[in-house]
Length: 448
Image 1 (cartoon, rainbow, N blue to C red):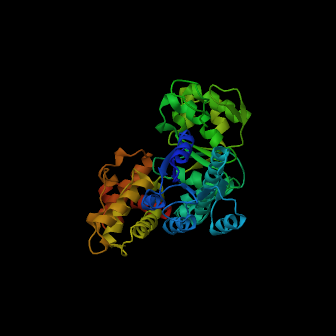
Image 2 (image 1 turned 180 degrees about the vertical axis):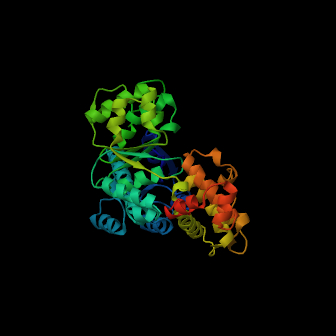
Image 3 (image 1 turned 30 degrees about the vertical axis):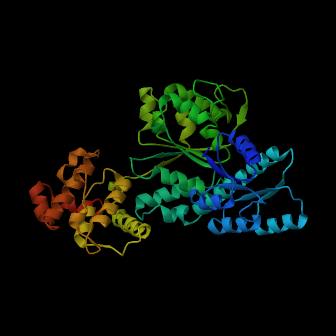
């Protein structure tokens, strides 16, 4: 849990130290004690998560201190502690927005702890709802957040529409940078599971010895360093969706445990005995061919069929060239808005340069290139020199890419057509092929 910052304002030194000590026993709380109200006000810049204040202070009245606190930070919850039991005062304070009013007696420590816990849980719920509301908006309306008009992307949109109507498992494949995570999130936030958690796990980023604990959780004392109980990612995603990116990297021994969890729809934390029932939708992604991994013995066949579900293959940017300029415009407009910049446009030469590149890093690389161009360009215009690549251009080294012979042939013909200003006869003569071959490929849409 992230540290919870609590202020206590209490002029009675002994009573203030008692409250400070008692609340500090919770390792998730950072507690700061003040004896004067003005001291608290001067430290509000540290942004406390909650304030506990005595209503009767020597330097400022309780209601005035509350008002000033709210002027500085209207969102911070305030708990009043007092010896007064005047119903009219208490009623007025609640009308002003006080979260709780506690009487100083022998049970104050327990009452205060319970009050803070209730407020903390309410704040967590509020933040969760706010995040959900944000993600429910335009951001994850997949037809607006996933950009593309090519035939390849239309096929992807159709698969997403099928995916959001059921709870079937989803397997997403595609090269690095094609947007597998974005697709997974779009499916969750357009499905019936929208009100529950979406948990993304990058399998490649977790050290091998911690994967089992991270996925399935552990009990306190299970191993050295397990100082408290830990809820695993599957349990965290219960009722919602879990996205396992780069699933091919999962150790073969852990694959069997994952298979059991998926088959039985339940798990037991490491070192525990309690069986936890699961209702989790699984979405996996990989850039590897899992069937080939099964053939090598690196991936269990039974797990492959369990997770395959509805397969969605994302095209590389090379396979959706007609989307390059659409995406470029989108990324530029997005960057301008986020950085409060003036409007920027592409020159014709810059657009042509974008269309000539193979983008081995796919959409992720295109976004980085556009953002850099927006920063370094002059006179609000992105020119040819502002488009900078870090990889070898496709027209300088076709064989560096993984393509079929037909794919390389298309690239070569496109390159020389451009070099010959679209002259089919000159290109056919230079390459020693029939002009009808080029015309046919053009007609079939292979050359664009």
